[in-house]
Image 1: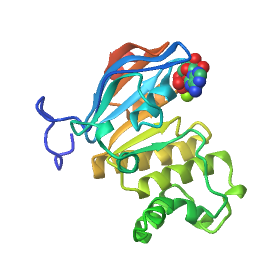
Image 2: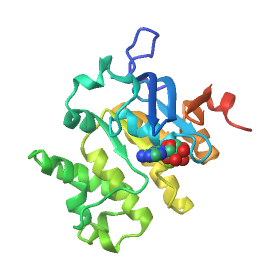
Image 3: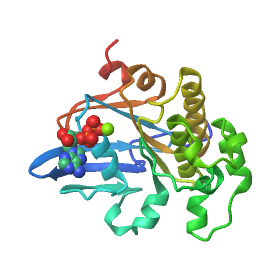
Image 4: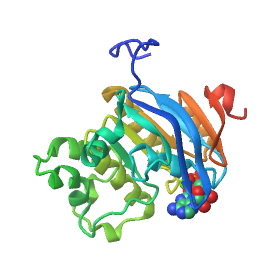
Length: 235
Ligand SMILES: Nc1ncnc2c1ncn2[C@@H]1O[C@H](COP(=O)(O)OP(=O)(O)O)[C@@H](O)[C@H]1O
Ligand SMILES: [Mg+2]
C-alpha cells in the first residue's frame, strides 16, 4: 500500500459509490441494482460477456445516461446535486472510441481547459503525451491517427482535466502488447500519484489481474460476482 495516502479504513467515504444503480432501456434492465464503491487509489475492473451492461454501467457513473433507479455518490454527495460540467470534470470518462474534434492532437488534448477558459497546463500535457508516445505527433491532425492512437489522445484529454476518478472503457483494446503495457504503466502512475479512483471495463482477464484491486463481474446487468481478482477471475 502507498504510504503517502491515508490508510483505508471502514469509515472513509469512498470517492465513488453506486447504490442500487439501475437503468432500464425499452423495457430491458441493462444495469440491475448495482451497488459498489471505489476509493481513491483503487482500481475496480468490470468484466463480463459482450452485452452484459459494462459500458452502460460506466456511462451511468458520470451521468452520460440517467439512472432509472438508484444513484451515484461522489465523495458522499448524490451526483444529481452536482452540475453536469463539474461532475464530468471530476469523473472523467474515456470512451472506447473517443469522439475527437477534427483538429490536431494538441488541440484535442487541451480541449477541457480550453472549453473552460482555463490556462493550459502545457508541461503536464507534454508529459502525458510523451508517456503515451504521442508527443512527436502533437501537431498531427487526428484524421491521420490509428484507432489506438486516437484512444490514447482520448485518455490524455481526460487526464488533462485532472479528474478525481477515471472511467475507462476497454482502453487498450486497439493496442499492440508493447503500447498496452505503456498505457497500463501510465495508468498505474496516475492512479497512485494522484489517488484516482479508477473503473476499467476490460474483456482481458490478464489485464484485470494486473491492474485491479476489486473485480465486478456483470451478466445481463446483474452483479454475478464482486471480490478480489483471485476470487472472481478464472485462474
Ligand atoms: N441506448 C441503448 N438502447 C437500447 N439498448 C441498449 C442501449 N445501450 C445498451 N443497450 C443494450 O444494453 C445491453 C448492455 O449493453 P452494453 O452496456 O453495451 O454491454 P457491454 O458493454 O457489456 O458489451 C445490451 O443488450 C445492449 O443491446
Ligand atoms: Mg461495452
